[in-house]
Image (cartoon, rainbow, N blue to C red; front, side, top):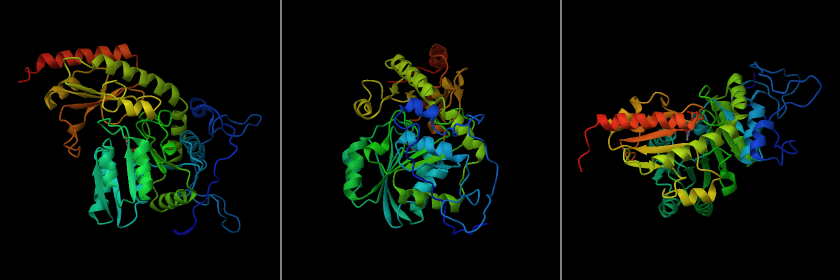
Length: 401
Ligand SMILES: *Cc1c(COP(=O)(O)O)cnc(C)c1O
């Protein structure tokens, strides 16, 4: 077995791929297919092997051992790179947070990381812990406040972008903040989980690394945990691969296979759930049973103009504000079709009061519900929400002015 300092295999950049030049909703179906040969399978196989034949000297690019490479990862890594417009093949991880840990390792010791106050909770906790150990300085910002982000970037080495943010759906001015980071010479890492590459492509705005919790929309069925990193920079990819090979947060072959299997329907799922989220947001806006709706697709939403300029849709997550934690909990417990659970991006609609997590930032209102709209019939989703809102309103004492 190669030692811990073995050179990780270098996979070739993608070139001359047979799916190049196709629309992204075709790429999700066509990318990562095995070579065409008579009687060959149309789907890649699952390769269950912890080691690979090694005859003679170990050469660059050899698979060698299962912590460095597995052929089952390749089709999904290539497909994700194609979707994000990365010239290097992607890197698959055991989870979005394993990918986050690798990406945070790019922050230099003694560096300065600028990060949204409302980033994904796990990423925030991990970055805070690394900062507390003294590895780097962490500056939290409201990512939608471009002037404040620019100010925080003075002397920074790394900018983390999440947009729309989780859970408040704030929208960053992607081109402006990445340009500001560039002027400082800071590396830009963008978590694109909420939007998916079908809706937003951060590398085109100048991001250096794109992160995905593949667990969510890309795999899409709430049955697998996976993460991914994409970059066009060969040097950055080599560092991230080195981290993955040594820390061992690798994807299981079956998980990787499930991820590609889920990806095949991404375009249909995103199209359907986005249309339903938009419909529900419009229906709920101005409904007296809720005190607010957050959805970048609503013309009155603070993020609307920016989202319309830099995204090709508005995503399938919406925020619903109820006057109190009790009122929000009453809505959740009255639902029959919507599933009360954390996570997002699956075929089934999920709902959650975010502040039920002790770690959730206090800037997220107590009565804030995050809705991940799935692919069910939108009338059924509405009927269920409608009855739960009415039941909760009847149950709650009228709120004092
Ligand atoms: C879920 C999520 C993560 C973490 O991914 P896991 O696969 O759960 O480890 C990171 N970022 C965002 C935006 C997420 O929603």
